[in-house]
Length: 306
Image 1 (cartoon, helix red, strand yellow):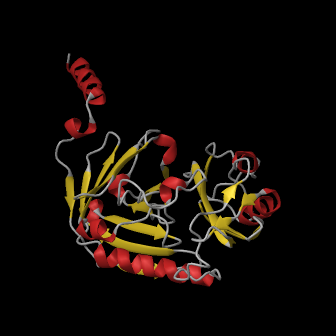
Image 2 (cartoon, helix red, strand yellow):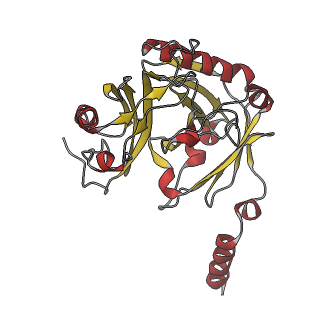
């Protein structure tokens, strides 16, 4: 009888909305200040929340001032069981909200064994500014015109993993942390040879793959995992594209895969990728960049090699 009751309760919880099944979130207070890390090709904004087994590290990551950051969550509060890793993320108050289904969440472990969840877009705002042009490529949802007034009002983030209690992180005002991340992104773009404050140089629209990118992405080499515990890999790709639509530089940040994958992937993309060039505010072709996130599903153990 007790076993049947537990089974019935599990079925009931599975059918309930997340907010009903877990009504009270775990509130995590900051346990460190915001820290900005400047990398060669990106900027990272980090802060720790909670303590002990409830400690969670939040890492926002961006590569230009024109893109909404990605987000990595690191720690036991986002540990996962089984295959279901769907996630809802909300920025409060007044920010956006977004649901990721299972194949849009990259999960893994840090080198010291901490569980991680990675999503490629943070909904600081719900929609792009309608006065700006719509971008042609299929990653347009990441390229938001971010609204400083709305971002300044955000001071909490609600993380709702599938079948786990929600987490409410007390971020504090995001005005200055986000401004520092944006300034860092501008300096990164300068390092690519483009002045972000010069409207003649700065792209107003981004390079757009001719006939879509699916064919040359599908033919990419499969990576080898660095760990038996890693069943997915994520490659964050940036191609610099000239005024004729030809890629002339390639950078890839990749997690949980063996060395050699980056060189092979860049060679493939530089040879096969073709674009319509970026346009500036005067609608003239300019140098620009195209970014994408490529996720690989790896059979456990099958791709692990020397």
